[in-house]
Structures are given as structure tokens and as C-alpha cells.
Amino acid sequence: MTTGSKELREAISRYCREVLGAVGDFDLLPTIGSKELVAWLPFLLQAEHVLIPKIAYPTYRVGALLARSRIIEVDIDARSWPTPDEKSLIWINTPSNPTGRVHSREELEAVLAHRSQGAVVASDECYFSFPDSKAPISTFQVAAGDNRGLLVVHSLSKRSNIAGYRGAFIAGDPLLISRLLEIRKHAGMMMPAPIQRASAIALSDEVHVKAQAARYANRRSRLRPVLESLGFRVEHSEAGLYLWCSSGKSDWEQVEWFAGRGVIVTPGRFYGDAGIKHIRIALTASDEAIERVIERVIEPVSERG
Image (cartoon, rainbow, N blue to C red; front, side, top):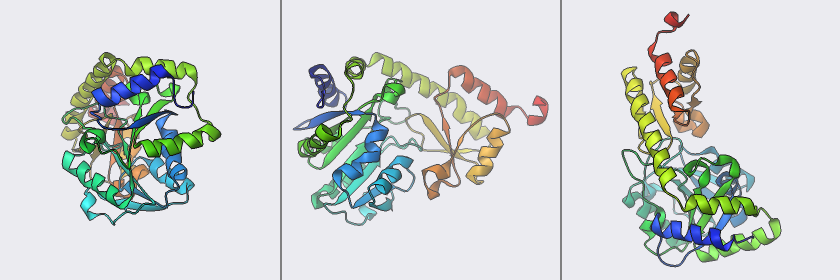
């Protein structure tokens, strides 16, 4: 059960090869959620330095704090980074939460080049299944079979809308997976058998994923032009579940503007100091709710009483 059932392992391996483009030698491990993995990976790998994007999923930072690692915020261009060493863990996220930005092949190649110094690259690809104006590529595909020092993280929470199941997996360098497996044998955190069964079934079907991706793309196409007509600048938002935008005011002023219209958005500073002029708008509400949001932001407050 620690390594996953035969059915689940086969489903993950097939998914990695057929959907993510993985080749060469790699191993895999089912995990209880991806958030949990992100939070504990620096500790499990005993990373002394953790490189995270300047605008990033907050759990990268929290995981580094839990491990008492030194946090290094970096720009997208890996050529500008300080040289990582064998005690470094590098987080990349494509498509990004919160920005929806998709890394190019060249950007991923530049990140992977840092493995030559012994650093571990952890590629968070939990929004991979939801392309829009750009289609993401997996870091597995860019690695082209050289999976040393590479870990790829995927989640069924977003892909298959089963967040409460806490189904996810990590795959990549067999030596790194072996280290994580050895710890798991003693620390526990094995995925329960019913969740393994459900995860195997979900990973074996792409029809429901494509339907969900179409829903997100439709919601973005409905909401984005409305926001732009109101003076908001939408940045990136090329894939995934979110719109990353700004009116030029502080994030809290923008949050207040939406709150006055009965709409909840997230202040950009939750994702780093570089986000203090932005907000994140989730596309996870129903189609009907998105239409109500459009009505509320277009209609003047005075007319709504």
C-alpha cells in the first residue's frame, strides 16, 4: 500500500508517459494530496535552500519555513538566479497559481540546467490539464529522459474536481523517489485503498477533464472582457483556474471594490510582496455564479440599492 496498488501505479505510469510525455527511467509515489507534499518536501529532502517564484503559491514558503530552510525568491528567468547547490530545492509552477502563466520550453530548460550543481527541481503541474490561450508542457517532456534531480507533482483535486479525496502523486528521479518511499514506510501518510481505487479510475479517463477545461475556458472568455472594459488589466491568465489582474490600485482597494458588489476576490499580496497591485479571481464558481458576478460588477452600486 505504501508504493500504491498495482492498478494505481500502472495508471500513474501510463499518465506520465502518454499525457505528460515522460520517457526514460522514472519512479512514482501516490501521495495524500499535493498541498501536503509541497508543505513537507523541503523537510523530507533536508533542503537548506528553497528557491521559489516571487509570486507563488504560499505553501512553497510555508514548507521552507517548516524545514527551517533559507528562502530565496527568484524571477522567472533562471539565468538570473544565484547558483543552487546540492542542498537546494527549486520550485517551479506551470501553469502558475495565481497568475496562470505558462512556462516556455526554453524557460524550463534553463531551470533544469541547474540540476548540474546537484539541485533538485520540483515542478508543480497541478493545473496542467486546463490550457487556454497557451497549452502547458510538462517538465517531464523537456527533460527528454534525463530525469535525474527532477520531481513532478500532479493532483486530482483540480484535474478531476475531487479535492476532498486528497489524491495526488509525485514522479521523477528513481533515487529521490526511493528516499521519499523509505521515509514513508516509517512516517506513514499512505493513501487509503478506496482513494487509490478512485484515483486510478480518474487518471484513466480524459473525457471529464477536457469537459472541465472547456468550462474554465468559457468562464474566462466571459469574464475577462468585462473586467478589461472596467479598466482592469488582465496579465498572463493563459491557463489554469484564475484571472490575475489589476486596476493599478492596491490589492486591498481592489478587494474592497469587489466586496462592495458582493464579489469575493483574493489580494495579490497573499502570493508575495510582488503581488500588492494585483488580485486573483477564481473561475471555480458555477457558470450561473460567473454570470451573477458579471451583472454585479457592470451594474452601478446605486442602482442595486
